[in-house]
Amino acid sequence: MPGNMNKGISARFMNGAIPAALLAAVRSGRPLIHHITNSVTINDCANITICTGAAPVMAEAPEEVAEMVAAAGALVLNIGTLSATQVDAMLIAGRRANELGIPVVLDPVGVGATRFRTETAQRILDTLDVAVLKGNAGEIGVLAGTGGSVRGVDSGGIAGDPIETARECAHLTGTVVSMTGAVDVVTDDSRVFLVRNGNPAMDRLSGTGCMASSITAAFVAVADDYAVASAAALAAFGRAGERAALEARGPYSFRTALFDELAALTPDDLAGHARIEER
Image 1 (cartoon, rainbow, N blue to C red):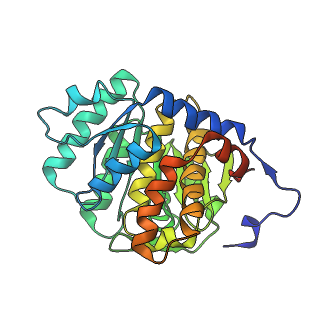
Image 2: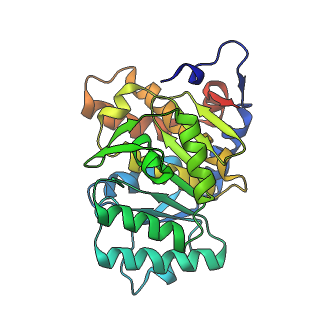
């Protein structure tokens, strides 16, 4: 990461009581999170939503999504395994969510890898009011127009400064941008939050990006400030990753521990260990 991502002793960090209160609100409110999502990771997304304290539903038939989303606290649109029918369902559900003031989280998985993915992500952004755009550095770089590379559905990185890339994307799209990486960057263009929780093992496990979108949706479902909620969600997930790595022997034991540690994460633990730098 560039040098300006690593601030010294003058760094100002968010009061840990804020992400802790949001985690407590998710646990007490148990919002329903409607997913139209990636078939590769759908079960992981459902279970990580439960571990966060929310309730998942994975309905994507165009005939029912408008009715289903009306009961939800947030909607996740994940383009990881796209089809034309699924895109139709996303737009139907997204329009209904917008009508009802239900926040929409878009995960533009693999955008830039194919024309269909790129055009679909842009169509969703142009058609719907997206509350949070959650992607990796390559995906956000593509949508920002500043240069990003994607190989399949994995990030190939960006050439420029991560903070400026995320801010440019937020400016262009009018959304909160949540860009995951070694240091996560969350911005609404005016404010920037750097989330320094996490463990490298999370990047070596399929589906953690999709899971991060589910957790983000759970947090924005109980919040008015989507940038703060997005940063808090990534801090909670990252903290669970830190705890999971302590005794994991490899990728799959880490995966199991990641679910367990998120389910066991308390607001007090998050209050004491969330590392969210405010810029």
